[in-house]
Image 1 (cartoon, helix red, strand yellow):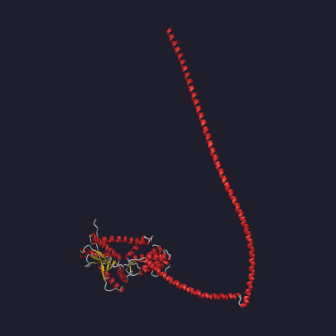
Image 2 (cartoon, one colour):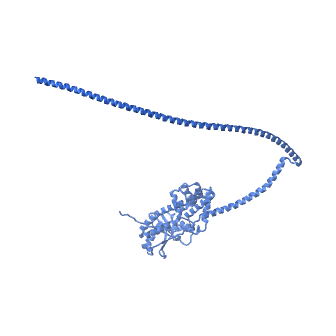
Image 3 (cartoon, one colour):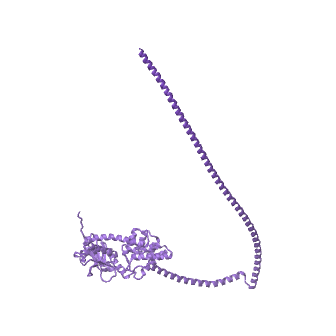
Length: 517
């Protein structure tokens, strides 16, 4: 029992001592925390005070700096105001001086005006006196001479007129003679200068072309078995092949340069290819025709580029290129047109006219010759229609219509084109009348054949001694072919004059073609 009591007492005492120790420890900790907090608060207060002092110092420095800048700016403004004030004062002083000077001038002018008024009055008085004296003298002269003033004046003017009329007439006559001489001289100089500035080679187109052969064996291949190859070539090209004893050469004869050129290229292509038979001939001929069209366009483009002309319709370019294969009295039509264009441009430049428009009119003046063998009518009317179709300038249209004198020239450029055309045609060697007549005769032969119903193509060959008429086999039978030959013969005898005889050959060929696939 006593042990239990003792144990309880010990526990109680331990608890009391534990609580006491815990209280003491907590008290000590509280004091330590309080001191630490007080130290931190003190440090924070010191830091805040330091920051306040630094901020206050910075504010003072900034305010001082701003004050210094403001003072400096105020001083600069004051100095500028002082300078402006000085300038204004100086200007005011200058204005005052000018005002004084103007006042002095005005005073002087007033004085001069007064003096002038006085002098004017004196002059007027003197003038009145002189007029009275003059009137008295005139009256005295009229009494002495017996003539009035108006009568004397009329007599004097008549005498002056008579004297001057002779002098004026003589002067006008001399001036007219001098002007005529000078105009003729300048015209001759202008034409000669234009011809000197443009000089073209003299070359006449012929009616035959020679094709060189690699060897004489090629002649046999060109003729073909029973002459089928040469007949095919002549039939589709309309060109006469002359194969004679001339070594390694074949002559192509045709009055149409385009037809002759196509035949030449076709034959050369066949010789180069080596395969010569009717089907191949037709293939090469078709390809050559297409290539020739591109070549014609190239001729037209080169011509317009050489002349410095632009804005041509593509179809008109092709028509211009066709002039290369046309002739006028043996003169190449395209070369002639370029020559006229150059001369027109030179003459227009000398006379102060539009050079570009003059060149354009000169180039197109014979444009109708490119297709006059395809369309009825003169090359002038055809050319006018072409120019209107492609909306050319009215000056160009009038130049085309008037270059042969059929229509009145409405502009200086039209007259220039006519002069240039005459210059180009009249130079030595430019034209060959006999060749032109020969070509016209061949063209007329072909026109007679083409004008008959059922005829497909007509070719004048053998220098016009033979006319080959190719008919449409589906429309014309063998008996009709003989009738066409007689009809052509009668028309030639009736409408044409020609030396020797002309052989008419009507060709009717039927082919059956199938394609196996």
